[in-house]
Amino acid sequence: MNVFRGASNIPVYMAQENGAFSRRGITPVLQFTPNSTQQREGLAAGRFDIAIAAVDNAVAMVEVAKHDVIIVAGGDGGMNEFLVRKEINSPADIRNRTYVVDAPNTAYALIGRKVLKNAGLMDGRDYRLNPLGGSEARTKAFDTPDGAATMLNPPWSFIAKERGAKSLGRTIDLYGQYQASGVFVLRKWAAANPGVMERFVGAYIEGCRIAQNPANRDKTIAVLQRELKLDRRIAELTYADLMTPGHGMSKDCAFNMPGFRNLLALRAEIEGQWGGVAPAPDKFIDLSFYQRALRHVPN
Image 1: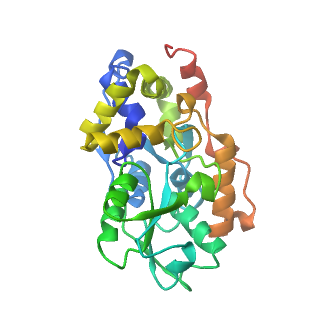
Image 2: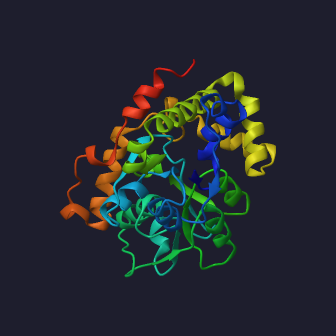
């Protein structure tokens, strides 16, 4: 299983913490990726079986790299904020500056490009894109004047603000619903391992439920502290974001179809794919594993 280091892993962490994987005969091996390019290439090459990240990466794998990938579960709304250096007061102030991204053509980078487009700015003409990789690297970009803006989610968004960055808004407010983190795999792997796929998704849903249960607040915060090496205050802020409807986790890590349609529309507009008209979502998703697993997850 390959993931970015961040709060979106809380369903996995809580599933591990509470034995949800082991009860289903699964021993997950967690790998951390420095950027989405390495993750996409690794999944395609079979270096791991399951990816959990922004599901726009799965769309990019299908449409750009021509790999047969399916999204099998949702997760959260991304919890992203458009963060800038303290001297910047609006997206228009990014003119002649640098927008730091993971990869220029996927996921949260596209939301930021849309925000800047709405301010009349186009990449390559009015500002520069700098693909630095994952959230930790982008947080460090604020240490130099060249890193003017980026999208960050917890805990990195709070760490960046603690160091002086400021927010120009949450993506749910700047753009609307968005299906962000989710689970995706090669279709052929899921077809060859349907039992494993269903059991994995069941453990993932259970981990999500455990995290979302208010009775487990302190335990979930403690796991965030331990796994992400956070102090209590940042962990509490991260937990609050995770529990914010629309912005944070979806109930039972369900797939957000309206948010996914927005994702496809964004890719069509910013990347010009599909002639600028978003396709139907069907070919990118297979929620049958999720639906079967959900029936057997304890309350």
